[in-house]
Amino acid sequence: VREYEERNLKSDRESEQQMLEMTSVQSQLRAQLEYEQRKDLPGAIAKMQASLAKEEATLAQKKKKQQELDATIAGLKQTAAGVEQQVQSAKADQDSFAAECKALKKNLKTASDELAKLRSSGAQTEAELTRLRSQRQGTFQRARLEEA
Image (cartoon, rainbow, N blue to C red; front, side, top):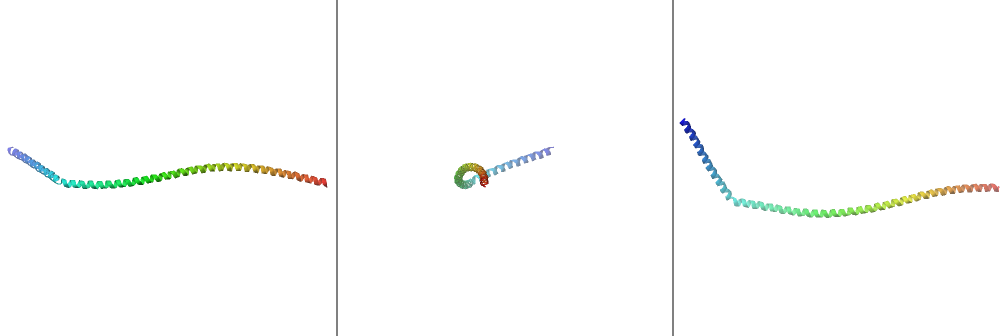
């Protein structure tokens, strides 16, 4: 039993010893890592500054592009305003042409009505003329018969 306990105790001590050694190694590695990180700090700063300069250049290009797009948009807005004025002018012209067309249609209807009245009157006059010719013919025939 003692031997078993001694072995277990010895095994536990060895495990503890190994654990302490591992913790010590881990502490040393952390310290070395921190040292290396501090040692390379100027390089990291330079890298960040280079990255910042690159981003600023990209931002400047994007601002320039935005200004170009804004100028294009302003030009398109002016063009749209011009087109809108042309559309309004065309609508006004269309309205005046529509009014003129309406007036001409009214005049045409009036002229057609007058023409129909004149044709009717002409037809009545022709009918009257035909009746009068017929009456005159009859009168001439009676006059000839009476002369003979």
